[in-house]
Length: 196
Image 1 (cartoon, rainbow, N blue to C red):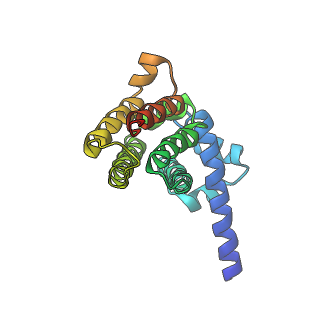
Image 2: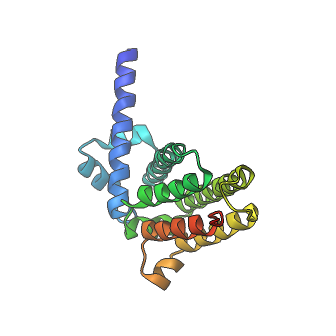
Image 3: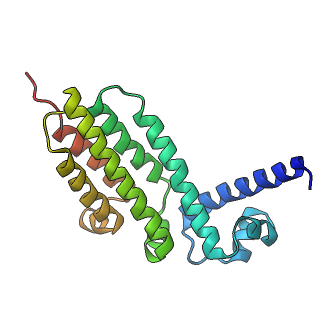
């Protein structure tokens, strides 16, 4: 195969994977078969096998792709403001926006399947670490009141975990994206410097 053909094949696989991300976000994935995926994505099963060797591996690739793209979008948005408190708010709001298209079926299926659950948990831990980093930077810069950054990070981690486990949805009726918006409002208000 020529390098042009290789590039075209790589581009096609990336396009199919992006389309699969949209499908699993909207509908979940446990009920899908490879035949159904191929039909919905208007591709052959051999194209799918070019991405992954099984439906399970294909789903993992799609979930991983979703979180990779979401992380880039979240970091890009948080990089805008120079004030750490605003960065923190933008970061959490961007997480909410990225999770917005994800259906309840997607979260249920992701939680029920160990490899995708691990991807979500790892991304939640990374997000909580980023929150600690933003809080610490803001305390040093004086844009966030002197709070214990590790405590704020740990508290955010606990809430993120509760969101992930569905406990917040059960207790409040909020979906994950809405819960992250509320978390953003709570945390940014809580770390605001005192008004003088």
